[in-house]
Amino acid sequence: MFSIVDIETTGGIGGPTRLTEIAVFRHDGLRVIDSFHSLLNPGCPIPPFISRLTGITDEMVENAPTFADVAAQVERLTENAIFVAHNAPFDYGFLKKEFGWLDLAFERNKLCTVWLSRRIFPGLPSYSLGKLCDSLNIPLIDRHRAIGDAAATVQLFEMLLLNDQNRLINY
Picture 1: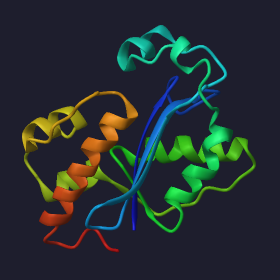
Picture 2: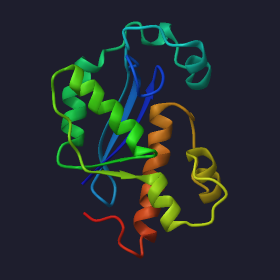
Picture 3: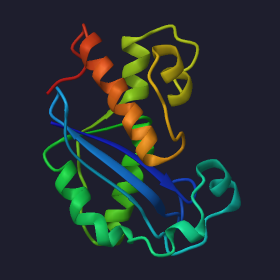
Picture 4: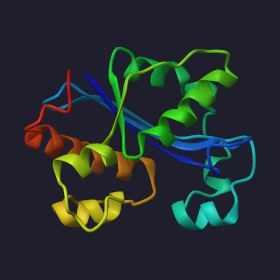
């Protein structure tokens, strides 16, 4: 079982930065079997640079749930599953931090689709999500939004599963 995750945030992993959006697709190795998506109220202003990049504004998240409000759903969708993300250390680190602020542990095995893509599809011009999707003809709608990036990562992950001749993905 896999949980393919993407998040949007108010900034980098360090310090008091918070989540502004999350998307989780639970995948059984063949197809998506469950999903969750929500904007999140970070409880702090979203920096203008981040709003320009993601399109997520303070007004959009003003009445959105906090991470505490959705933590149980995120826990349920990622429980007993391998955590998969494009640049997994970033997404995983943020979720671990958010759960920690709630005094909850968050421990998952993880797979990074950047790392996997470099090994399964060597020699591509770039392994950023946008350029990788271009190289592999994966549609990427709503770039820099959790739901769009996670949906593209699902398709990328399915391609990685199909082309994993060296059995890098163990489940």
